[in-house]
Image 1 (cartoon, protein in one colour):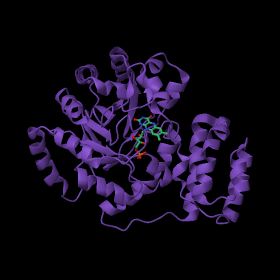
Image 2 (cartoon, helix red, strand yellow; image 1 turned 45 degrees about the vertical axis):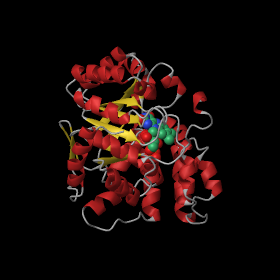
Image 3 (tube, rainbow, N blue to C red; image 1 turned 90 degrees about the vertical axis):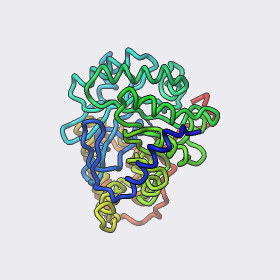
Image 4 (cartoon, protein in one colour; image 1 turned 120 degrees about the horizontal axis):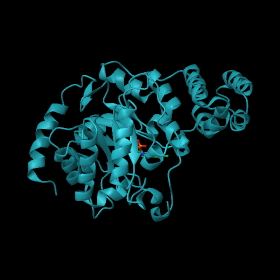
Length: 366
Ligand SMILES: Cc1cc2nc3c(=O)[nH]c(=O)nc-3n(C[C@H](O)[C@H](O)[C@H](O)COP(=O)(O)O)c2cc1C
């Protein structure tokens, strides 16, 4: 299926990739300190979580949750919160979505004017409300339209424009290689590829061969592989098998926020280390504290969503996890944390993969 011209280019890329990684890479004019990126998870990869992960070390590029271009342009508070950032929250790209080209163009301009250094166009979201208006994965169905949309955004701004997409709409329409090539021609600076189709949603195995074919389809821009990376070994495997330049990790970073630090150690030839229980509890506290900088007391409500995840991850006794789900004051939070320190280990720590909810059921109804 891959055009021969693409295969030749990939062969050269492949041989470059077996060299030990220096750790740094570029996306357009931007220097990125590592080859391991945080993949956006709407509702999870907010400013506080990004900052808490950055402080652990090893993270390359982070991307905001997807932001509806029209809502950003209308100055809606929810969208402004999603793009809220601070000087140490770098390198960062803001991800926008819309089925309307002028909205994407104007949102990209808005971002550049407000000092953001990268814009990512969402072409992977499978949700009906995003696809219904022609945005997200729906854009992948019409190569010409998608290409001219990316071209219009690239022409409108001088910051690097990237695209995140899936392999295609379904198994009969695998368009990622063709699209990646088309986007490179009009100046996209990188492509992130989740190795599933829109039809697959989050089911089935990630198709590493599909990612490899997309790597082969571009001449020089980085392709960032994505999907189901849960451990440093998975990330290294994805890079080795597909030849992708970098790996974006979403749910795996929730499961193990230390994954980037571990990968950085491996890149330097050092053994990766697991966090101690105290470091894990410190991470919980840091995450909450950073959240309060943005949301003040309202963080007590927002943080409840993470109770189950931290409960499982840290083996927090169920009564304390329950309190973490209902607390309303900073003092109560402090008291819960003090008890978590005392009673840590009372409960088995199951692997909390199931705790990041993915849309389920027939995907036409998402
Ligand atoms: C809860 C949730 C929210 C997501 N939100 C976004 C999003 O805002 N933008 C996006 O491009 N992808 C989004 N994704 C897709 C992820 O970035 C990623 O492509 C996918 O989960 C596969 O990678 P992973 O196995 O490392 O999580 C989301 C996935 C999940 C589970």
